[in-house]
Amino acid sequence: MNESATVPAELSAADTAAVSDALDMLRLDGCVPGLRHLSGRGFVAGPAFTVRFEPVREGEAGPAGDFLDDVPAGAVVVVANSGRTEATVWGDVLSRVARHRGVAGTVIDGVCRDVGGSREVGHPLWARGVFMRSGKNRVRLREVGGVVEVGGVRVAPGDLVCADESGVVVVPRDRAAEVARLVADIRDREERIVAAVLAGQSLAAARQEFGYHELSRPVERSRPGTA
Image 1 (cartoon, helix red, strand yellow):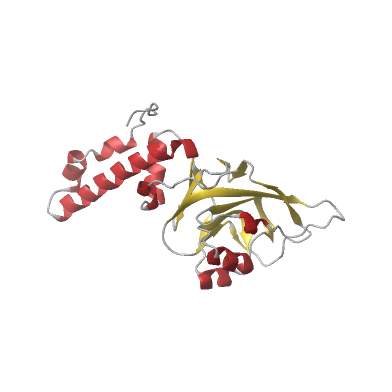
Image 2 (cartoon, one colour):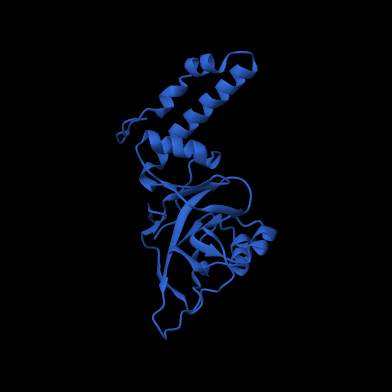
C-alpha cells in the first residue's frame, strides 16, 4: 500500500466545488453524500489511507484499532463503517495524535465522538454525525489498506481525497493529473468572470466571453503523453 502519492498543486489550492465540476466533465462520480464537516478549517487534499470496520460477533471482543501508527503524514484517513450511527470509531484521542503526526484529515462513513476535542486541536474531520457510544466490542477493525466504499463511492488506497466545508470528493489516483488541469481552468475562468463583472461587465456577457457554459460539457480522457 502506498499513500505517498503527490497531490498536484492545482488540487492543493482548490475547493470541492471546482473538483466536483472537473469530475462531472470527466463523467466521474466521486462526490460522497451525507458527510458533515465537523472540525478543522479550509481545504484538505491528500492520499487515502483506508480502514474498514465490521460488527463483532456475539460474545466476541472488538478492541479499538491501532492503525493510526501506520498512517503517514499528509494522508487522509478514510474509515469505512457502513454508515453506522449507533457506535463510534473515532474520538479526540485519535484526533490529537493524528494532528500531532501531520495527518491531513479524517473521513468517516459513520459517526465520531468527542468532537469538541477534535475542534480544540483543529483536526479536519468529516462524518455522518456525532454520537457518544464507543465502538469497542461493537465493531472491530476488519481491514487496513483495502478498497472500501464510503457513501456509495469507491475509495482505493492512494486515491486523492479532497474535502472542505462543502463536503468530500474522491479523485481516482490515475485521473488526478486530468482533474487538476481542469480544476485550474475552471478556477481561472471563474476568477476572470468575477473580475469582469466587478469592472462593470454584465454577468451574461462575462460568462459568454470566458466560456463559462463550456465547463458543463463532458471532455474526453487524455491519452498518455498528451497535455
